[in-house]
Length: 380
Image 1 (cartoon, rainbow, N blue to C red):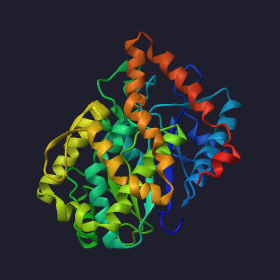
Image 2: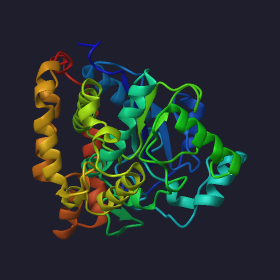
Image 3: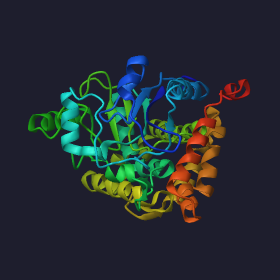
Image 4: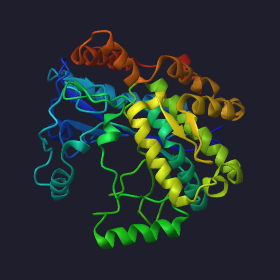
């Protein structure tokens, strides 16, 4: 099975704080003690990167073991991990530097402020063939709003409602503006070189969009697709469900590019399609699963839930063939019960405070780190 599946891994960003939900930054001392964690410009959040794996049963422990290790370090300082993708109970008026001597962090603080102080999940898939990589990038860019809708978990900021299911994606600065759907590797290289030359990109990493190519020497040597639009999903079963859903879409494309590559299928121009995708992302940030989006094939309106349902049906045969059908099961609960943001907003409407909701989320996040059973490990 491993040769049929793609190599995949995660970049996981997390907030740290107190059991009452207050954000407390510890990135500088923590990365000295635990060098496998990475500092972000603001020290209230940090990152770890999982070892890429083919099999889903191995990904669970890759996700959870660093969290357990981090939690032990935090517990000795009376701190914990916080759910959500924004400073739900934090103070977004002030940037709190993790490394005051870092010149790139100077630029980030001055240019973007706390709009970039968020937590998220980046999902990476290994694709070595460049033509296949850029074909997959186009499809995933066109369907990224669905992944954001599944993952939305940031309806609060500074202790208040924001009006968005994903305040993180709403506030995060897309950079540069008007990123095209790249036609091929040559198009991407030329575009990046132009933007570096004009200063619209500060370095080759300064491409902040829903999905981007990645590799050991960007923009020239590429070997993976990186989805960046996901809010933080703390539940490992749900994260693996979203990942399997996305992988099945990519594998379907790789088997049938002539019916799934937007470059070949969409009735819209690539310029109009790029604008439509950004519009869909913005709509999903506000309403997530409750949104009406616009299909990349022809621009027609479609409800987010209906679109996801249709795609679950379409990938079912391949999921059965690859033994992934059980991995998709949490998405059924998500469609009926809502994502993290929708559940939190429901609790808020019922009278709970933002602090009470976040404290419940802290306890739930802790319970997710119980070691998996041998039976779960054998599920594949």
